[in-house]
Amino acid sequence: MKKHHPQHHRHHLRLLLPLLFDGTTPLSYLDHNLRPKPDLQHELAHLASNEFSPPLSFSTLEPGKPVHAPDDVRHLLRSLVECTSPLIEWSTDLIHQMGYSTYKELFDNQILQMPYIYKHYIDKNDTGESFGTDGKYTKELLEKHQRTMAFWTEADIDDSISTDDILLLSMHGEDLLDMDKLVPTVQRMFDFEDVNDVVAFASTIRDFVAALPEGGGNPLLTMNAIATRAARRRDLPIDGLRDSIVVGDGVLRFLEDTGLASSGPEFVHAHEFGHHLQFEMDAAMRSSRYAGTGGYADDGDARRKEMMADAIAAYFLAHDRGGDM
Image 1: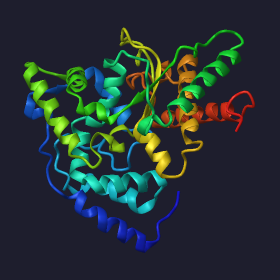
Image 2: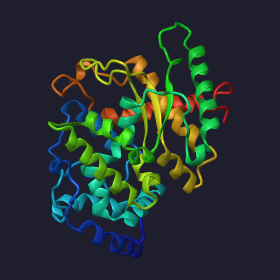
Image 3: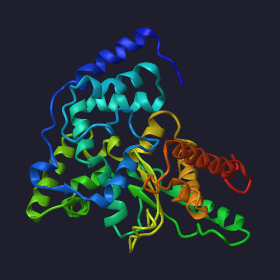
Image 4: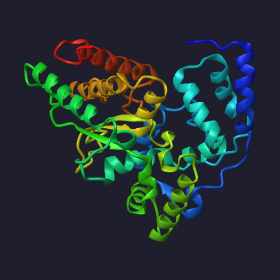
């Protein structure tokens, strides 16, 4: 963890304080008589707190709650003062460009999760995937994906795991500008009485996203990489879905902007593939030791899960028949 110099503290906070207290959030699904679907809330919360999440998280705030309450933003200020990282600096700059209240509206209305929901639940086409701006990472990632599946299939000497049918999918913010994609995404995420309310909210989202810096290409819209399961919870099986790794254009943009494009995509892919090994080995799924907690791991286990995925990725990347790095 790198400490800021005191003068850096003051400069950083001077830029961000106007954004932390800049008012209300006029865009709201509540104004369109929509209600978030209960069955998706755990999954959406997980997406909002992944390792690539921007530093200004609102996981403890209620949708529509004013951001000028000091207790609500104290933890944000503390995180900005005490530590920094390339991810924090990069995403903070992007949030500053669009404005804090704008980012909060994206968060409160679950717009930041919509590209993933479209790709995982709506889009049934698993061919013609394009990764990064103008598809610049497509060939590289698809080749790495095939090599990774072959490596772990060969390593499975007792045929106890299955990792040879995992899809590699791309996630694009531009999908939020297409009403044919956006309307069914909103329908999947919200309960409603009148489909006209869905269309109206989708239209509002489209216009809102179009007005962002870089529009649908803003990397904060897809700042995520996710390992998905066909059934995210054993007691809630979801038909018609397949295991996949979903990589957002925003993650690739971050790696490119911070000088990590040469090897970063391979590290990200290997880490997410590591999660699939965990799924197969039951290392990241429900366990009797979480009885009374809803069947999900606590924060300590979440950290162990991420560290295990890193370890699996490191083994593959260092192996001369794997990444050979």
